Image (cartoon, rainbow, N blue to C red):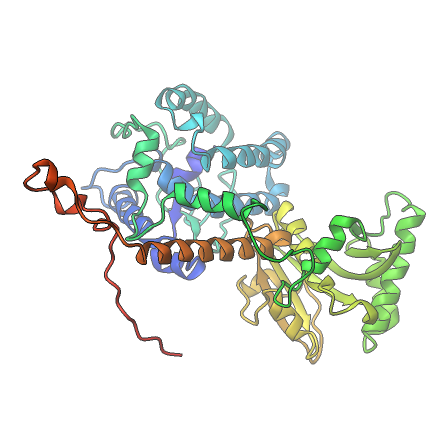
Length: 470
């Protein structure tokens, strides 16, 4: 089924990918996109050109570049069209297919996965062909990634849609050519890796990492106390590790009676929101906090609620609306708000919802900007219009999550990266100031030697003073 989706998948243009992921390497993707146009896409409507299946002529580079977006859109499509699927296919698509994609994602981004072995591929391809023919038929309409042939079409956001003119019930029936063989996967991966002038070897990075993580090697004052330049959430993170504060996702339920502790926390959340948001009607706050469709990430300290974020998830639309966000006044400016939002981000990454929307008043805009929110909404307007509540005098803000970022440890990672760069700079400065002794090989009768063998020549880089404009 998944291979069939790849054969009919319409890749996003390099310009669109650059806008969506500006930090990605676009040159390699652009090369694969051009090849895909020439060998897979254009031949669909130009019969004079030989057509190849995407799964037959492309390998791990293309799969890694499109897998994350494709996986998210396939799961979203499955949730939206679950009512149109037959019962037997519904169980397969909604239960087994997401687990398969999660397991496949680990293998795709693993360096030593057996799926890249040629023998492993040839053994599994026959099984995949049978599964495709019995479970899924090709989409007859452009822009559709539905799981049966009579489903309605859907425009795909963020770089993926089904290509038109799909022929045959299986994209693997044709045999246009042999797949490129990978004799040495590690060597080939190193060859494909883009080289950067002056790039730092991994051995040096590992050596620096062992230095900065070794207390005996790091001289200087003790760092038990927070510095003046520590991250906003550093104090809250340390308190969580010591067990001073806790985070719990709570909500009311109509199916089973909540226990007394959860009800007490919900009442505490209602009181916090009412005191910190005086312009919001108390009855409205109570209704949403106790609404079974809403959940709240509660911040607990010494057994009582001191803050929380009330939200409602819309899995079919791919976003969550943040309704209330507050911390008691006497517990503010301690990093609790930042750490609270980071926990909420990781909670949603686990549930595969990567977009936040909220209406922020003039006092909350600054907070949400610090948490990565922007007035530029990334998801289409049709996704959220009619789903979220509109507040008068408030500004709609959105935040797109990156599933690869551990948000609760993000500031620690940035700090560690800064330490690594600082140590690398110190090492480079020491090399620049190093004085090498004279050559003694000529005393032994050697008449000439290669210039690059002279100590210090191969590592020399001419110093160029660049102008910096502020």
